[in-house]
Length: 103
Image (tube, rainbow, N blue to C red; front, side, top):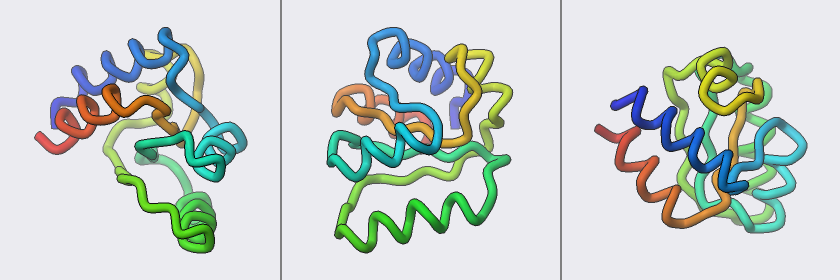
């Protein structure tokens, strides 16, 4: 995984207004079917991950979900907002971030 490039891309997406960061806004984006990618920081709780999985299963929402080794502090440094869960609300940003996370 190219962590630094992925963090840079998250920062660009944040400045473009294409991220929903934090529990409430990310969950709203997923439930409203605006999100095309969901990213969890490495230091999020299992309870948070299970809550999102349950909500997505209940509504039959199928979007890519990544459990990264990126910490909340690294997200805070690159995006200016400390969050453990991020929903990417743009298909093009999602594709690029997925390609960086899979490397």
